[in-house]
Amino acid sequence: MFVLVTGGMGYIGSHTCIQMIESGMTPIIFDNLYNSKPTVLDRIEKVSGVRPIFIEGDIRDKQALAQVFAQYDIQSVIHFAGLKAVGESVEKPLEYYDNNVHGTLVLVDAMRDAGVKSMVFSSSATVYGDPASVPILEDFPTSATNPYGRSKLIVEECLTDFQKANPDWSITLLRYFNPVGSHPSGELGEDPQGIPNNLMPFVAQVAVGRREFLSVFGGDYPTKDGTGVRDYIHVMDLADGHLAALNHVGSKQGLHIYNLGTGKGNSVLEMVVAFEKASGQKVAYKIVDRRPGDIAECWANPAKAEQELKWKASRSLEQMTEDTWRWQSNNPLGYPQS
Image (cartoon, rainbow, N blue to C red; front, side, top):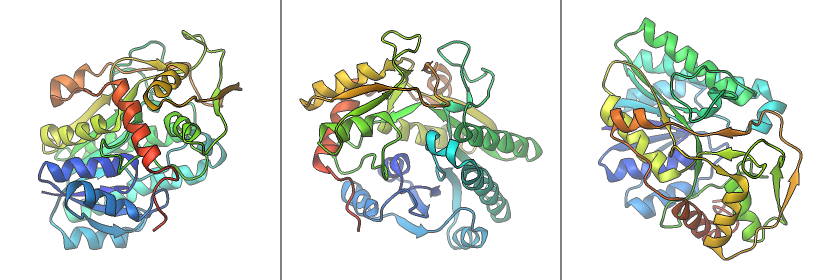
């Protein structure tokens, strides 16, 4: 089964490709390498024993996409490609709408021309905005508190409208919470360019000596210790969730929406303590001002995915932190440049 994986060289995409290969699928990676490095391909091959087909290209380039669809008998698309930093999106909203929204529309148009009618879209829990209560169910109201979240929400709305107009399509929206962790081999992990926007790579870089201290954005939230609470999910569980979506609803007509999370929340300081335990390193931190667009707490009710996709997050907080440290200590500067 050939599956086009846009953004397949990125953090979640690369881990998903490994799981796809191990399950007998053939991922075709389409990525512009904006936020990833060519050496990821070598690592995927090292871990899986298979070197995936890789095409360097941008999802806004319809001609390049058309060539891929013409060359391979693609059955489905997993769509990861897009910009993903909340803070950056506040500074560069147009770039986020161009990449995330316009790029998706070009991709769907190319799929339609090629007769490929199955997509799994990498969405986000940010589409719930600042939820009135937790845990969050799929039928909660949606909104956005920043341009990144709004770009995901707009794409969801576009895909929802498109699927209604084309009922023979299968479109799955996977709303994931906070991916952390790395492949247990230590060969693949999260390697943000520049200053990390997510918590765990920042913590790991402090522990490995690349950064002096962790900036904790906000210590005055109405939470157990004043820091933000999130649903942290191991990236390997998340990768398995994409395969479950392909296997259970990828060929089933309709619009399918699932939360991918663990169903429990941990605070920033709880994650710091867990990482210190896993790594044996002290993680210095400073409480600083809240970031615009951040919310106090957010975690999932993942029961629908468990019931319909037969999927459940199984990896523990200890595994998340241990795998993160294995990756970072083995690759203190991230992936090699080439």
